[in-house]
Image (cartoon, rainbow, N blue to C red; front, side, top):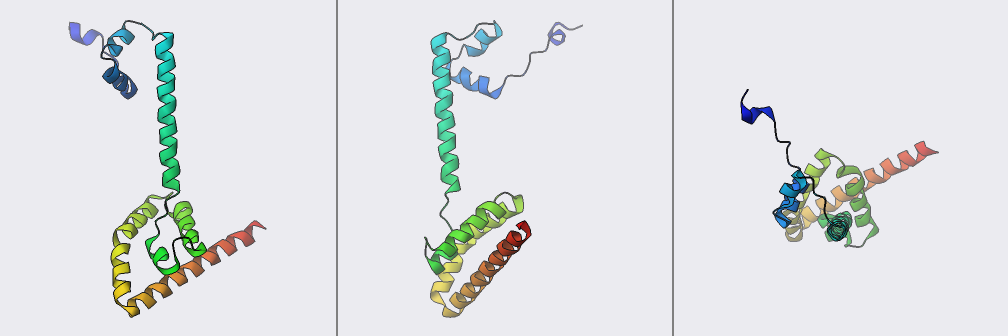
Length: 150
């Protein structure tokens, strides 16, 4: 049997690689069975909490996404109809891969659509009719859901 194949080195966890970037001797010390000092453990705990806080703030910022270009153009950024469409996006579209694809395509194309609507009253009317029709469908879906809950 070959000397090199008798013992396999276990894979290194990504978090350990990160720690090794901070302390180049970390992996060697861990392999030798050394444990971090109390002060190092305290500092690692503080660092982990800072990372968790940062990640939570990013998640909160994402959930308060104010973009809804076409509705903001038609109704205003703080209009209840615009907020209703944002909620539809967040609750119904974003949880699904196809919904995320649709939202991404919408964000890429809607500024162009708004530019066209600003230049053409006919396109503006069509856009208004389409969004109002969509709003009606959303209200109908919500009303039917609420009737089924009773």
